[in-house]
Image (cartoon, rainbow, N blue to C red; front, side):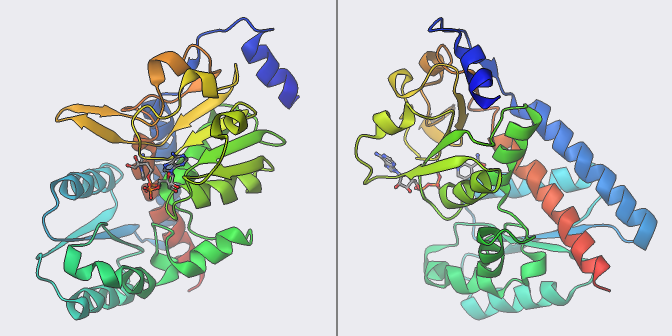
Length: 303
Ligand code: NAD
C-alpha cells in the first residue's frame, strides 16, 4: 500500500508537480476541531478553556507571536491572559508568576514565550519545569517529554504534532514509510522523531554531524526539514514522490521569509510539499489551541 502510494506519486520516473500542502487549510480544520471540543467542555462542565501566555522583555518577533496566540484564543472564545513582564524580571518573579498561574483554576494552559531575555536564559529549564505538567501546553516539560517518548498520553509539542496531524489529514501514509528528520532540537527534531515512530514510520534522524546526508534523504518517503538554513534541502536530495515538510523559518531580507527547502526546485520532484510562509507555521497556533483544550479536558476529568 505504502509502496503503491509513493510509486503512484513518482510514476516511473516521470516527475509530477507536487501537491501543495497549504497550512491554512489544515489549520482551519484543526481550529474547528478545537472549537468543537471547547464547546463540549462548556456544555459538560460550564467552564471555558483558558490560556496564559507569559512574555518577558521586548523581543518584537515574540510580541507578534503572542498577539497571534491571543487572537486565536479570542476567535475560539477561550479565556486568555497575556502577562507582559519587564526585561528586568528576576528568576524569582517569573517563578512566582508561574506558581500563581499553576494555582489559577481559570487557566488550563501556561506558555512561557521563548527566548527569555539573556539574564534569565540560564534558568530556562527551571522555568519550563516550574509549569504544572498538566498545564504545559508547549509540551516541553520533562514529564511530558518522557510520557511522549514512552508512548503515554501527554501534551505534545505544537509544531511537530501539527506536522503529524497535517500528514494524517493529507492522507500521506506514515505506517511503514521511511521518514527522515533533519535536525535534532528538543522542540522540533526529537519530538518529530518520536511522533513519526508512534505512527509506525521507520525514522532516521540526521543532524550537523551526519555523513552522506543526501544519500539518506534520497531513501525517504517523508522528509521533515528543521535545520534553520535557507533552502538547505535541494531537489537532488529528494526521492521523486516524497512528501517534504518544511519547518524552517529563515528571514533572508526584512520582508522575505524562506524555509529550509529549496521550494521552487523541490516542488518539481516531491509528491507533496509545504510552502514557507503559509505552511507548517500556521499549524503551530492551531495546535496550541488543541493543547489548551486537551489540558482543560484532562484537568476537569480529574476533578
Ligand atoms: P535548532 O537550531 O535548535 O536546530 C537545528 C538542527 O539542525 C540541529 O539539530 C542541527 O544539528 C541541525 N543541522 C544544522 N546544520 C546541519 C547540517 N548541515 N546537516 C544536517 N543537520 C544540520 O533549530 P530548531 O529550533 O529545531 O528550528 C529549526 C527551524 O525551524 C528554524 O528555522 C526555526 O525557525 C523553525 N521553527 C519553526 C517553527 C514553526 O512554527 N514553523 C517552530 C519551531 C522552529
